[in-house]
Image 1 (cartoon, protein in one colour):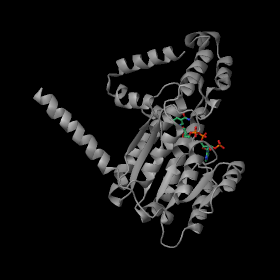
Image 2 (cartoon, helix red, strand yellow):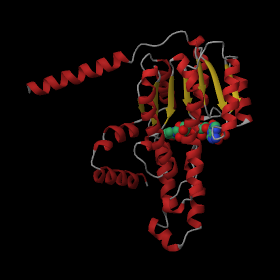
Image 3 (tube, rainbow, N blue to C red):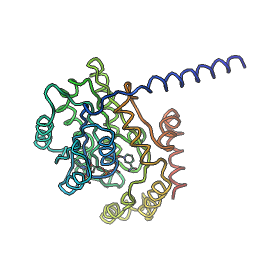
Image 4 (cartoon, rainbow, N blue to C red):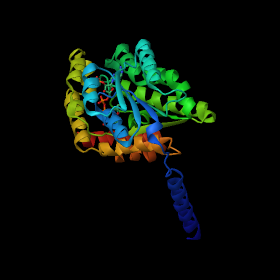
Length: 315
Ligand SMILES: NC(=O)c1ccc[n+]([C@@H]2O[C@H](COP(=O)([O-])OP(=O)(O)OC[C@H]3O[C@@H](n4cnc5c(N)ncnc54)[C@H](OP(=O)(O)O)[C@@H]3O)[C@@H](O)[C@H]2O)c1
């Protein structure tokens, strides 16, 4: 009983100290400059607009002109949208020059937010091609590597931070093979970078959301059907003739029973950008919390079985 009381006190003290440590905020947002990639839509556009409203200066990289012009119409003059394809070295260099051209002298970048991402094709691993993998890795993993390498000197100038958008799939992959591989890579990149730049006063955080409903596009399984249509009947029978129908059910289940509000994701970014001491990892949504705080610590054979049961339940 005495031991339980001591343990309980330790946990309460730990939680309270952890909360207090991450409470203080930086000030003077108007003199801080943030770079965000992939701002055409989704969380990224909302984040750019929220930072703009808070008074930050934002350089918003947009993948296409329509997204860039739409953002330009609704933002303040402190938010500057510009075209950016994170898979092209030339485009990243042009964007860097654009940023340098607008930064006041002796000012660095306070935060680089690597958000640009694609989910890629979804099908069993053996049906996908190398090209399917390369396409996703190019945007989701090599894009953030190139952006980080290009902006690190400016971030160092401000003793700033890098915020990488990951996903719960990066900690525990299922269903999306190339996407899960890319997000595991983002977790590894963030862990390595954090150690490398710690002494330079730069922090590195990841945002790990679970299934957050943004659009029902995610439940579009037409692309998956194409892979099965090209396969031999024996292969199809291995995964089940109703594979695509089941997949659609799973997506609809997760996206209709969303596990957190989009604003919760934006709040996590805002904390990572404004806290004096940002957290290294922001896990958002009950599914992400169950996976990272419970399943992750179980023996694989139990965790795998539980995931399979959950997916069966969702169909
Ligand atoms: N939605 C969820 O439930 C969920 C859950 C966990 C994690 N996430 C992650 O959260 C992030 C945002 O999700 P979201 O649903 O808001 O996705 P989204 O709307 O598709 O945002 C991704 C953005 O990246 C852009 N992009 C694609 N390729 C690019 C490139 N080569 N260079 C620059 N930008 C590029 C896209 O532009 P285009 O629109 O022109 O393609 C889009 O604006 C993604 O990383 C996703 O992996 C989402």
